[in-house]
Image (cartoon, rainbow, N blue to C red; front, side, top):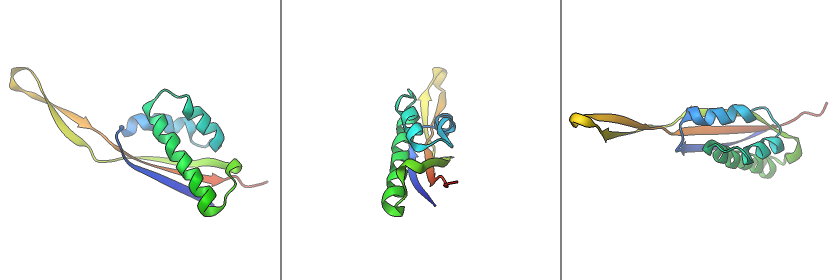
Length: 113
């Protein structure tokens, strides 16, 4: 059984949040939350909140044991990009792309062996 949580339109580029997601993918939830708490990246705050939401969904909606959960999957997809322009020399402009992300976290219970 698995539970999921989704965060859409995060104001961080997918490339930056994927670096943090790769560090915690496949780890037990308690260990992943401890790692994310002390990471300096902006994406660590977003992922920590998202994983806590997925754990709450697992506990409240599916009656899973919180201590046996691990991060099965973290999907990071590209959201819409805002396009802005910055004035440059000689009357020219250069584009600024403000990228956003859609992130989905799926937690699952470890099977007893």
